[in-house]
Length: 151
Image (cartoon, rainbow, N blue to C red; front, side, top):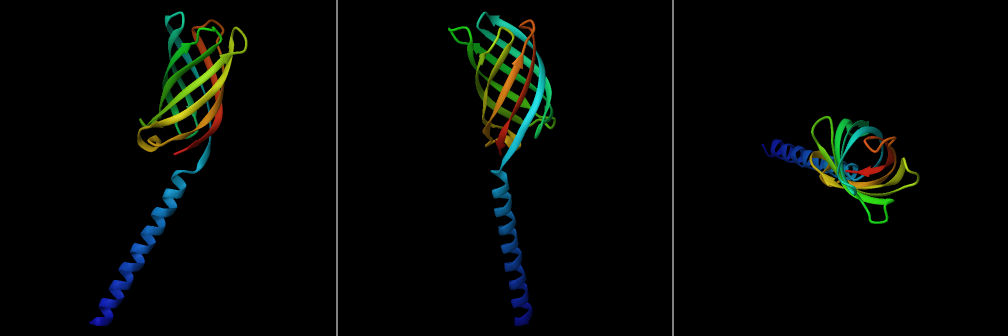
């Protein structure tokens, strides 16, 4: 009987150690930096000459098809801006970010996204992405972005 108990204890210990190793691997994987890129098209609604909400649809790595809402605030200088945004992934997970940017022509802008967390798998998301945006009429907007994300 003692041999059977020892084997059961050894098997239990081996399983616990294997589970600990697996969770350590998952924890290491969770924070890994991954490429993040995508594109979107949207419609801007100006609330004032310096404040807009832009609703987009698009596609990105780690999100699949997404929707997103952007809150844009144009600074007093008239060519730099900042804001916040939330992506909603195909499965409902949300990815939040802050952004800053500047117009480089009357219709083109560039800037940086900084990921600040979210929900689901993005709860502790971090990273950055560079973006390029184009608007022919300050209503329709197209954007492309490329960077890295950890979650």
